[in-house]
Picture (cartoon, rainbow, N blue to C red):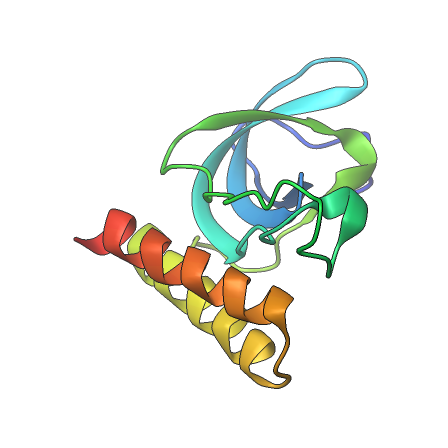
Length: 129
């Protein structure tokens, strides 16, 4: 599939803000696709994206993943074919994407990584109770 020819109902991988999602194209909106979220491929990053890696004098954002079936307007160049015939389970993909982010943050000790891990711990409580 080329970037400009996704059809409604097709599964795609879409990069949105600082996360990556697997979803279903709902409609073509010219320069964007409306995509319904079915799974999380990469959890959004934590912290200030404009000053990534810093904790001093910045607003350290907690970023949640988009919810199951939440719709997003995604720029066409950020939408790619998804090769599988079925999206993974949303909750399981959310859990795996958080675990992957945690493992990345645990590779190096820094105040940024510590703060990001605190955010993730809080997000796990919100997501999974």
